[in-house]
Image (cartoon, rainbow, N blue to C red):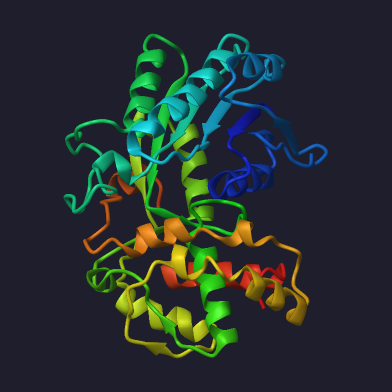
Amino acid sequence: MDKVAVVVGARGVIGTNLVEHLASLGDWRVIGLSRRGGVDVPGRVRHVAVDLLDPDDTRTKLADLTDVTHVFYVAYQDRPTWAELVPPNLAMLVNVVDAIEPVARGLQHVSLMQGYKVYGAHLGPFKTPAREDDPPHLPPEFNVDQQQFLEQRQHGKSWTWSALRPSVVGGVALGNPMNLAVAIAVYASMSKELGVPLRFPGKPGAYDALLELTDAGLLAKATVWAATAPAAANQAFNITNGDLFRWNELWPKLAGWFGLDVAPPLQMSLQDVMSDKEPLWKELQATYGLAETSYAEVSSWPFADFVFGWDYDFFADSSKARRAGFHEYVATDEMFYGIFAELRRRRVIP
């Protein structure tokens, strides 16, 4: 094994799948960084608990990573406002690079995970399809600041960088504030238990908008490709499933997977209506013998409200990655079915 990966933010939806994918390839050693650490897998994955906001702790904990060849940065810290997101998220990336670059003499690549915030998608209607060379918007935006830092730091160095821009990412990892699929699964499970149809809870226009998502497994493959393919060096790439959908078509399919009928959409804040549902969650666990997953671990309600509030088209052009050599794709409905089935297999949902 001559490739050693550090996955920064190894416990999230994106990081978990990336660690698993790298470990499955057979020719990588993987080191996962997160605040909580994790269980080491002998010969495959080592976890390190580190406070990335503390430069001293980061330097100390990462001082022995001298054989690292690839850094995959997928960490994120949430804050109440867009402006408040910038300092911590930029600082974590800077602290990681400051700690690893001086000691890892064989460093080849630093991969940065971004998103459609680069295009202003979180602010309101934006140009679609978004393309990697679209002009920037007025700051603050931590994704842009992070990329500018990497570009400046890489200048004159032997290592390269890449930036991956997925849409909303679908995956199984729990305890994540941005897990739409888990939120839908829990919402549907509770609706079924209460004997009510599955209503789309977003803004009226959101039901008819044109959207796309990104499967976490697909994103992991694209991330490794961009970090190792010479044609992808020092560039940004939109990474999506490859299909488009409207909730008005997909929502009934998701309801059908749970054996639920649908009724006309009804705008409501899931953060509000789910605030009193922890007792119901515990009842579900007791009735169906589910795993002891805390309600907080499956409560991505603010993020679900955010996504269901997009009453405008939300998609990007991912042809640049295809032209450069990445040709994988995933059907979005099948992505959801797979996530729901895995949640059921793990006894997270009945």
